[in-house]
Length: 294
Image (cartoon, rainbow, N blue to C red; front, side, top):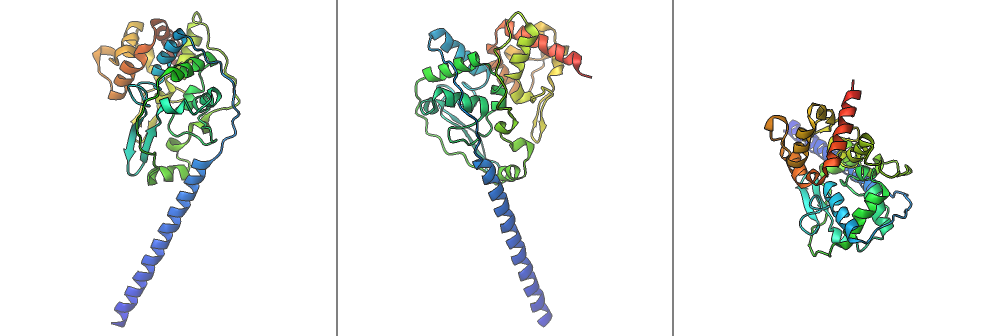
């Protein structure tokens, strides 16, 4: 009987020790993830010229749609914001109501949050691919801001974003999929104007790096993470120009194949807004890129 009681006391102490270790681990993860979430980024504001004419606003709408700002992550219609991921382990990710946000931000603050991923309080945005938007030149960025300014305010009640335990673990230990775009951006890099349309390959490079890197990676070699896989864009070398145009406008691949739901939606909702000249330039660059691959 004494031996049984001794074992029970031993098991009880072991259980208390495990519980204490679990609480300590949870506290460490929470503290490290909070530090990452609350980090203040020192990125100065920069002036961007924002046009007000109807043509520029219309062009801004097209550019914003291609990049997924409008009719995409922030909801449709009327860019009233959207909940685009809600998982008890990862958390709830909410794209804010842009119609409301643009009225609280100056033009320079909007340029910083779009291009650098830094909010007005100095903290970094989550999920938004600012490292892709960082490739935009001043004219295109100004047109996008002009469109956002011209949109009417939309009342849309949204829940708050939350950070689940899995995301906190990733933030705490620097998992690649959880890093902020702000950490991947050279905030001191200049933003030269986009190349002229008659330099098709240079123009195509600008379009690829300011449009395609969100899904295909900064080097356009595809992304391979848990639950998310995209191909390298050197695959475009197999596409004759007409077939590439069809892919960009409909999501239908060579041989009439229907690709995954993501590419189909991106093509129909976003890249279908490219002009023929833009698609041709993009094709010219990607074919050149493929020829340089080993």
